[in-house]
Length: 128
Image (cartoon, rainbow, N blue to C red):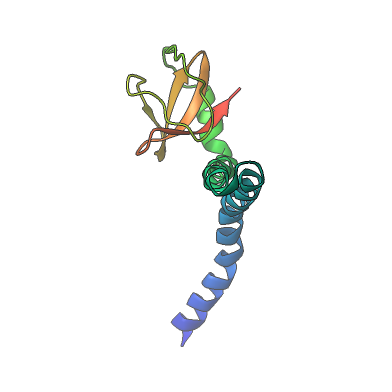
């Protein structure tokens, strides 16, 4: 009985945090899809939703990741394409893991640090 009660309390306590962490991504996808659809129809909606979700994900990055990336070393690589949230980095850009946050990688591109989702190489945050 005590275990069930403890589990129930834990679920109730953690639910708002989980919902908050997902809300920025969900809201970004929803708003991006609506804007994209209004401008470009169904295809614009799909693209807008993807970009909106990426922007929402960028909002959800912990402050510790951003602050630790700011001080990390790395030579800057010149990329001719625009480096924007939601777009992948070219294969020749070296990605480095963020210490203590292995789910994120970073790179220094065009003298700016970017946080990247390592599996897809997509930029999820540009540090100005």
